[in-house]
Amino acid sequence: MNTPKRIAVLGATGSIGRQALDIIGRHPDRYCATVLAAGTRVDDLIELARKHRPRLAIIGRQDLLPRLREELLPLGIATASGPDALAECVEADDVDMVLTATVGYSGLEPTVHAIRAGKDIALANKETLVVAGELVNRLLKDSTSRIYPVDSEHSAIAQCLQGEDVTRVERLLITASGGPFRTWPAERIAAATAADALRHPNWNMGSKITIDSATMLNKAFEIIEAHHLFGIAPDCIEAVVHPQSIVHSMVEFVDGGVKAQLGVPDMHLPIAYALGEHSRLQGASAHLRLEDYANLTFERPDLERFPCLGFAHLCLNKRGTTACTVNAANEIAVAAFLAGRITFPQIYETIARTLDATAFVTSPEYSDYVAINAEARARAEEIIAKY
Image 1 (tube, helix red, strand yellow):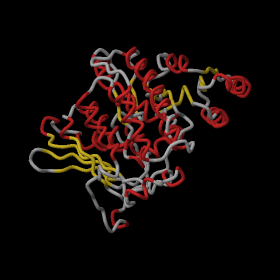
Image 2: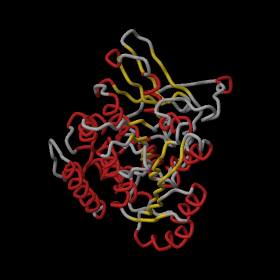
Image 3: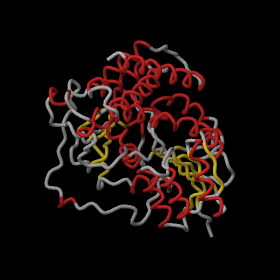
Image 4: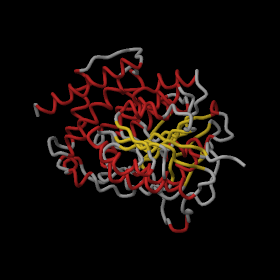
């Protein structure tokens, strides 16, 4: 009898983490969660640890560790805090796969450690490949690790490429909902509030990812990630706006044929597909009924209203630490926007100005990414302080 796959769930209290734990909990014969990690939501982490009984629970903030320990130690669950604990846990012998569902740059270090330890990775943290895709791919060449994408768009592409010759791909078409401002004129977008930007029409995501959807920087990041995941040339990867979020992405081949993966706007299917290493799990997601959708429409994205989308090919053409700087500046700018410190258009402006003000490394190693990430954050803060 096969033993359950042992999974470390990083970002357990977020949307992806909770849906992954739902799948794990419903299939104890196939999966078990041996590590749960969260950033600051200690009460949520305690609740999940009580339900799933991992060996180890990790909280990001050191000051929250005493509460975590007080609640979980009587249950025999070990506790820890901080980035070092996160990096170490993925190397443990009782971890077969790491689900990286943390937000932003924080996903890079544990993913690097997981690759070096030969662990398979269900990757929901797109910033890992955005920031350091070339480094990650170099490390994968010397490791037994495999990366299984969790993002619905990249899962869709992986599904469409099953059984296909990747050299016969003409284009990857990554779909975008268009976010809450798809039909808004530029002057209205300029006056948008955080509350406006957080009203995503189709998906229930965390605030950072929802703002990235509103700026369409998330789609720029997905183009970069697709290049590193599938080895397709940057000029052959495009975004297309699909407001209904039913077609999750498409692959066009040299003979003119196009394969698309369709499904309801729900992350259970791509999560299960990754955890199962591209095998299909019975009942993973609600079934799509096409008769319920009278129209499936597609549009070209508007770079004038959503200039952040242009960072995709800028980063892929310049390479080096360009994307690392863009990501760091965006994380600072989004936090400032959510706090009411800057306007919506100033997210793009902050990123562009940070790029001009931050050092550039052509062929970075891991330490270079760490240094540039820190420098770009400092530069972005300085820029925001002067608005």
